[in-house]
Length: 355
Image 1: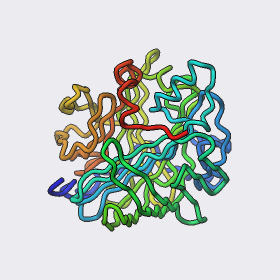
Image 2: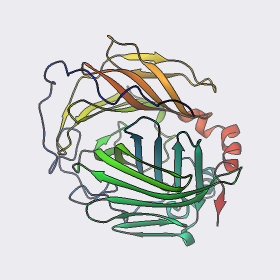
Image 3: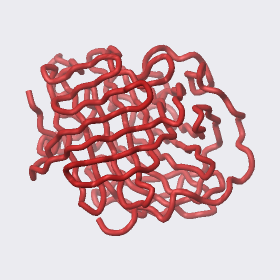
């Protein structure tokens, strides 16, 4: 791809104080500050932890994204235990063999001048090792060294074989223990681990090296994601003072919409704010409708579409949030599209499984 992913990571000064008041996260687990149990893919101090039990039919993932300081490169990495996008896991559940540890994968997507590389190979339990500070999935692994999350990647793209080999380091500016339910039943939960982070990427293949602003969170669920949800939009935007604004806009099959809007400080503190109204974004090439909650004073503009699939789209969007001009990473997931027969039959061509 040519050109920058963003005009800038900065913006105008914030317009006044936020409603809701500031809260500290060392003891903040619920969306309103309750104690968190030792789940959510993290330890008691908020650091990532990889040995959490995951029940049959459930899932747990860790998500990282980053954009380089010069706007020329971006990446996303998702480590799955019980991959929610796996057709093999869906078929296993139907057979009554819903072992999440037998359906693990590391999804890596790189964007930049060297071209896009995307890989997601599913591994069985025989190729997976989990301990408190390490998650090994085939030839790749994530390791928490006490201060930094180190991700060593050695994967191959399909259907055109191209190597993706390198190391990514995620340096949290502060650890966060915030967690919130995404559904009315509380069976699906999301929590940022390092919403404000610095990321260093160094790849042998493709040959790129850069650093930039990054983000780390985790999601977990006690059932498949197609049970309660129809769609969600999610976005995160770096703000001028070094904080990160995140909005989760969830549509459920039953019950009302759930909207979570939180500003995370580099220290790990957070404060809620009132989410702005939805703005429509252009439909994708696969005709997925998408929206984004942004300030009405500035129309949202998609500057780059990084991923465009039949059920999922990731974009870079210029808009306004909390009175600032911002550039956000934005995602839309259409769950009925994901679980459709046509999509499930297509997925093995992009997501091979190694037994």
